[in-house]
Length: 225
Image (tube, rainbow, N blue to C red; front, side):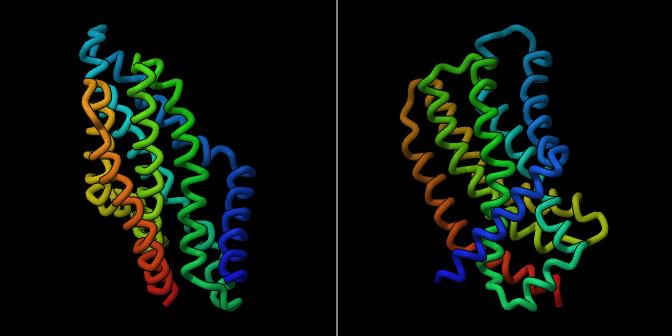
């Protein structure tokens, strides 16, 4: 168990430091998220009522696309420099590596998107109650997307046109997260209860944490074989 936890900590520390040294790649999805959200007010005009109604959907779609944009780099460097082979030779747990990679993606992509959402909610004039529900849904949703996305990213790494293939495979899998996440924030904006949607998101997160690392580990073995 200690070796398992050490492997997860090593993977997270290594990848976070790598992202800190290469800040450009880490910042691209965050900049894309902010620009994507800020373009909508220019597109729909000055109708504040309309903007308030569609703001949760705008934020969620932008967050989903940004998280997808950052997935291609998750395993690419390790695949290119032979780190995967070294992990296997060292007999490290592939499941622990998969879990560490999923958490790394959330720390590098999901957490910054979550923090950036706070000022963007103010720009879109969401009230604090709606903002709280949106942040809660985004927290569960981005974690779920990181775990699911890691499995698909591992399966497509190294393939020609892998980025486009990754997006085509992963976006349909994100639809349930998008539906419940945007519905929770929309209900809160209308003064309706959002507990049911948050419970569904929590259930999806538990399912992803339970099953996705195994799928990621299997995908890594397929790509290494």
